[in-house]
Length: 495
Image 1 (cartoon, one colour):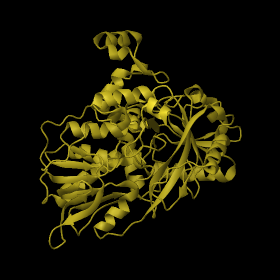
Image 2 (tube, rainbow, N blue to C red; image 1 turned 45 degrees about the vertical axis):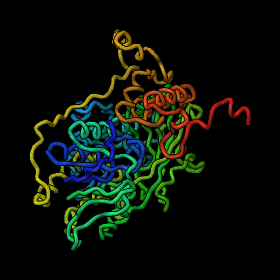
Image 3 (cartoon, rainbow, N blue to C red; image 1 turned 90 degrees about the vertical axis):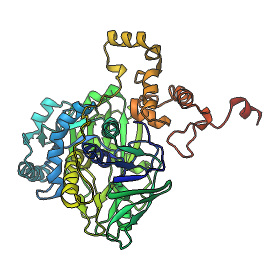
Image 4 (cartoon, rainbow, N blue to C red; image 1 turned 90 degrees about the horizontal axis):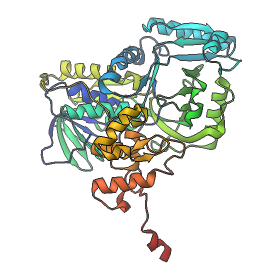
């Protein structure tokens, strides 16, 4: 996934603002056609915002009120992921999910969700007793009296999935511009049509502009004169536990929903860690991703209500994400009448990751139907739906590891002991676009294990500097001023 350099040729048919799961899936759908498409992302690494910090859940589709946009797109997105993960080679585990009730009041809510699921066309949903749940999940709390089982729910590696859509879009002709924050919109002289966008790296011309800017999507929409929706930045905090306790659950556990949302969840990730969270706190700050002591206590207490005896001392890290929660609680997907060519894809909060592929198909169809006079849709004869991730060394049989090491000695050089990541994987991540320590982590997982980069980070810095042809002092954790090193050791000793 190489980044595109900004060139003098900035004329595009479609500009997508944001390279998260929404922007990435839309870009891939657009790449099926001979359109000139650009994706503009303000961050250094993909994924960055809510697509990076979430529960990685592929929801069954039973939780959303029938008739809403969420209920429309979530079940279809769920179905699409069952084949997309094979086409695009990202981790996917069909684990099913339980919404757990404690007592009669919460059990009544399960009946409501069961009705939603059936109305939304979700297959296999049923209410099971607490005893039946524990026969499958022996670590579930004895206080759980019933649970709603959804067999089609799944979990993915959200880093790999987000990267896969953009990677495939790039391979099919889409241009990606990182560190390219949109600062304004460009219109025709009479203001009736889109003409492009202004960014911190100059102007880009585009006949259609798709606003998939996540937590900032309402700000972008207001630039177009549309204030029909408001984003309420909602922070969620999480814990990640060592893989040695990932076996505590097999399925995805939900608390019974409340007015604050779906509540704290417990899950075994696609990479076998244990994940608990999130909180749900509305805040004014769209960038504050700090974890807090009260928030983490709330997460642990909520998770322990579902699965007691989670060993807190096995937590290896915590993190927070900010979700783009629309004030009306639903997705906001609409092409404006004026200026023509401006399309909002906003408020894509849970189940947004699940819904994204289905939303993308709808958005491209909407552009075809309502804006077909602005851009011409012709099939891309070179479109290739498949894409391969680099080999996951830790999961390969020993014979394949030995074969790779014979073809390239870098496959035999372990950089990250916790995750068994090799130098060859790090080099390939850099070749595909990673330029920071965090970027390499998103691609191939060094730094995600028990030591959280204590062993591998210096080696990753060294490889990044070598492959990018820069000084190690220029390597950052996640861009901008997040430098990993402050100077030569001997220089510091003299100070």
